[in-house]
Image (cartoon, helix red, strand yellow):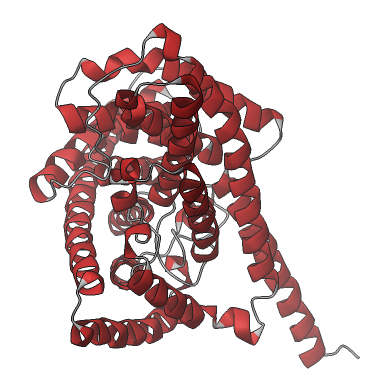
Length: 448
């Protein structure tokens, strides 16, 4: 057994101190960001939903100005495009440089822009990325490089976004680190607890909250196995569809129309927000009101609409996360299954919230390959809605069985995590850029 020297002890204590500082800074940054983005969302929906023509004209004019600003920001700071999660994960793996100078600020600003415009994108992705960049900034300042610490910060940002430390800790090991190391557990807890404490003082808005009153009986469990089939198919379809669109846009990124599609996206989103506001935004409002849609064919049309618009807007040229939009798709598919089971098998109306909640987290688990984080989100959503620590535990066994079933089905079908697919596309694009640069150098400096 290796003897621990005084120098080793000092280094470890320094790492713990640095971890605490990162946690506090992440909590501060994500807390302020979530507080502002919540208010921007409220303002945007008020302006779009107002009957005053003057106010609607104002929001349209401001959104046009924001479209120009969005294009300018992405031109000079490409690292803030989309959710930014694939880029930061490539940075953690040492395959891409993590830029933090200006990008922390501009990621927040561009996210506010897309939120005000009413894009169907969430705030959790930027929270993850900004947290990782804050960690990298502190490491660079202290001259102590540690990719594991950046990965832990990313998961901490996720936990702060949802105000769920359990989900954040599981996300750290399941999605950010992709490994479990007991030696990292203490540092993970220090970072997550300190960040959650600071974030909770600033922001009190829960991204996910469900007031689940009735839990299913054993006779009702069939509905969760139906969800396995439906969400496995739809989740894999979503992952492959967004990969196809992302790959297409990346391949032809120099095409004039694709290069400037951000303007067309802003125009489309402005029109959609004016004409069908209840279906737009990140999806939080739609999730909350999904029970008001009780005609099956209408809910199917809503799913198809959100499926298409999420893929289109989630493929780049704007800043925003995909977690809440993915959860929204899961909620809609859960409502479809519930309405069918209610009509055909007389499933109790009181079970609608729990069916929708399990469905949305199952869909998320299939797309992102994070079943444990999905379970934590179910528990956190029930806890946030009821305030009862024991109430949510009742559903976890059947939720765990069915969520893992859906996860293994998607793995068996060789459909990878959405972020892994995005990383492959990014690396392929980087390789093409290097080849083109080399060819240009050869053409400009021909050998004799």
